[in-house]
Length: 107
Image (cartoon, rainbow, N blue to C red; front, side):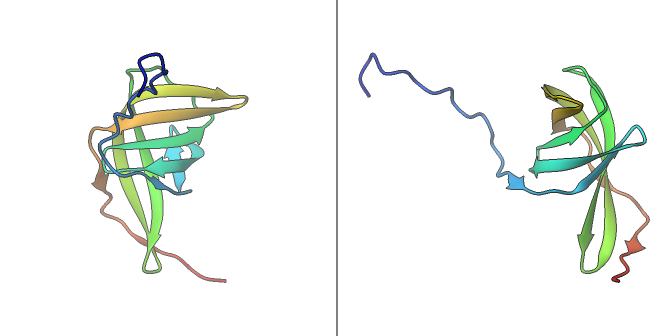
């Protein structure tokens, strides 16, 4: 690469990310994931947060016809204003599965 060529910032992600839209609940409000990895998550909601704060939220997903909840604690590392919505990137601190499961009913 020529010396005068601009360098792109190095991507510091160490885990594979998966684009997905799953429901998120935080402080009784709803949101939706954009992507998730073993170490982090990016979701959109209407709950404002500060960088560096710890947040608790629930991600809901369906596996083999059953709804599951992943209860998470994350550290906010990026906040993006999207009008009346807020994009939040958080590094997972403590994900764990809820003890309850619900069966999804098909219409």
